[in-house]
Length: 320
Image (cartoon, rainbow, N blue to C red; front, side, top):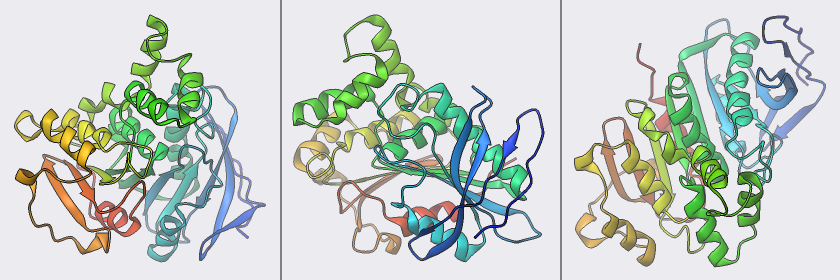
């Protein structure tokens, strides 16, 4: 059980309630906290851990998946990493599952994540050059949003199987019969094309509208080659996100993107041997870098490879 900690009184008031301690896999000592939103002054929950260190420590912010919330245990390996390596860990709620307007890429959700980082900075000593963001699926979508909307916070962002274009994804999942399209419609006020206002919501909540601002930020985008076939997000979303940040000469052509998606395979002319043991049996099949952004397509579907994400993030440092 994490001991009760004091309440800070500042321009943004932070409150910490640690009467609940949860277990994330092998991890114990991750506790429930609450901090005040600077956007609407509500108390927002999160799971949080800070090591007992006198020196400044890295902070890993991990974002829950589409239907998850702050109590989700999908990223337990990330919490375990933080305990073993003396990193602080934050798993915010940012308005819960992506089933309503205030949750799906909203201004409230974005501010909740930024406020969570501020909370961590006041709760413990954080190394400002080592604040990292990681998300999978819906969390990967929001990680891309935060890379474009708040690039100055992060030393590195690792987005796994993310959605980059909500309007495109709505059409893809509606065609496949997935009920997630109703979540997107509720969040944006209707299906794409319903009105100019609705279409503005889709653009405002989609990472592709902002990713040009992430140029220079170390950004790691990953997708399983079979996602969109066995999983819910076609890998075109990851490839298009890479293109939005990459230099013109490094972008992946529309024809090659179509091949990736349709064939669940790397186009023959793009096949190169890749050695990266951090992916284990989910071996990397394709990788391209441009400046500080890279995209990796691996042998898998709609999933995270924790070791690959965490080891890449641990190598990143924020430049002055």
